[in-house]
Image (spheres, helix red, strand yellow):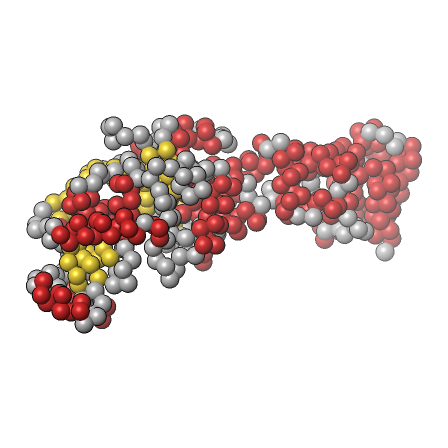
Length: 475
């Protein structure tokens, strides 16, 4: 990599929403670029016109920006190696296709999908690698021209050189060696004229100056093909790091069925970018610290040598742990914006009490829906008691809540002095004092600190709730 600035890339196909596995790859590339003071490139691999969609290209860029994974080069930012959408690079690919054909390193293939499927079945039955037989490899120029003239559809295949070894040092998996005899000539241009992944992905990495390709281990066997292509074209080779795939609890590749969610779904559920970044940076990578870190600190500690070879197992409980940590470390202003933008909290909590509300409930909130439940409980319409709260209130009895109402008239100030006075007249102490009060005031048996709740509710609402608890005991 000497002589070139350190550069990583994220090169998604905009054919759907970004999921956890995709975004983890983007994050790893971003972290490495930041750690090395390098460049993070975004490229849209949208050559498959039937599947690519502008709305997904827009969505994935929104997802990256929301996570703080801003790119230094790519769509909307520019750079010296554009355009950054492969659908706009057809002229570049055409030059390289023609170069390979002139050198005799690529040839048209007229085999149909049906013929190729039969070939694969025969090879597998004979315990051979299911590689292309080379049927069209020896066609004469005249035969090729005649078939093209008749309008026969043809792909373009790269001619694999004779038996040799292709090796490279993978930054995660160590030395890798492949035998060209097991590869077979592969398609670099589809019959509709669009470039195949093997081709445009490798060519663009070279032309855009990417020095380290970090991608999933499912691409490992693509790498020797791409190395052979780049060597044939006289283009520079990047280094490669093939990261372990993310799997579900059952060990199978993560899918929607096993809990994989899109970034859009996670954002809608109220996950914070800091939570996702802290979780995903540790999903297949080891940090010395278990503390919540900002993006720059995550980058400073992110090293290729600490990437795992074993599959990374997705654990939703760990993701929720980092969400709780992110909520704990956010400012009150940030939390209010987060709560009110993703729930009806802003409609329920009086504006003057917004930050007091945040300080009161933050230890009991993981998602905006939790904040909404507390806002509904504290400021909403007539109170609803949770079943366990209702049972506790009835078990405590109306005498206690009669005393509680009386003491409110005598001790309307701080909660601690009110609690002491109520304890003296009722004889209740500890849990038997505070649990029934909590149940009466919030409708729950657990939640925020009572003195904060006391200030937030105010005397009138406290009186109404004690009255409701008293009446419940009478019913």
